[in-house]
Each structure stands twice: as structure tokens, then as C-alpha cells.
Length: 146
Image (tube, rainbow, N blue to C red; front, side):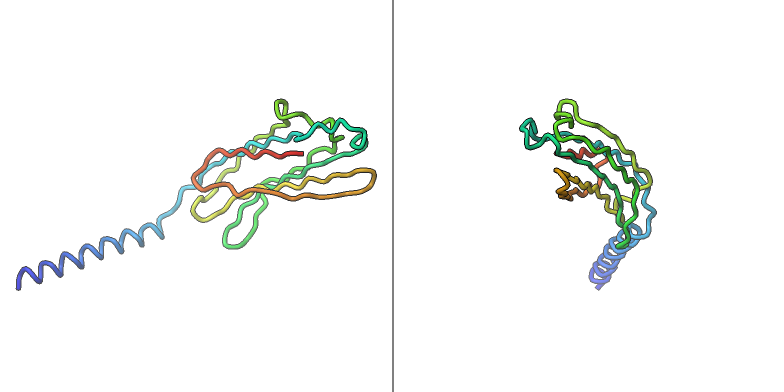
């Protein structure tokens, strides 16, 4: 009988310890982290043909976080419009490093979205793309191909 009571008490103690740990994890304060995002913008093609002589492109990059289904813009930049052939190759890409502070990695998602606007003789086309930054990742690289 004593053995049965001891087994029951140990089982209840074990379950209580697990439950306490889970509750403590839910309510413990998460420390904010700082993330660094390296942006590289370069042309992916040569654009040397005469059809591209008057073709231009501009880039807009938006970094935002989502918490509780609310989007909060953290950084928004429009890059100058350039002729396609004037964008640098990847070896000389336009670089920008953005540091974002106070991110709660467990509760917030961080996104980088970019919109490329192409303009050829008044004909305009926009392409939107982006990426989600991974939790736990402190440094991210985003390459934007023109």
C-alpha cells in the first residue's frame, strides 16, 4: 500500500513539475533581440541590347514586423530610378545594412518586402517579392535582382 501511495505521489509531482515548467515558459519575459539585414541590389542581366536603352527601374524596400496580426513598418526606403544598364553587377552591388532592434523572436515575425517598378517608354510593370526572416537568425542577407 505504501508503495502505491509513493508511486501516485511521484507521478503527481512529476506532472506538476512539467506543468509548472510549461506555465513558466509561457509567462516568462522574452528578451528583445537585434537583427541585421544586409540588402544587395544588382542587375541580373546585361541589358546591353538597344531595346533596353530607355528602360528604367526603381526599387522600394519595406521591412516590417507582424505581432498579433498587426503590421508595423520598421523601415521603408525608395531607391533612385536608374537605367537598367546602369545598375551594378553583383560584384559591385548596391549594399545597405539595416539594424532592427527590440524584436521579440517568439512573438513577432519579421518580413522584408521589395517592389521593383520597371518603366519602358511609359509602360510600367511592378513586381513584388519578399522573404520572411527566420526566428533565431540574427544576420540575414536579402538579394534583389533587377
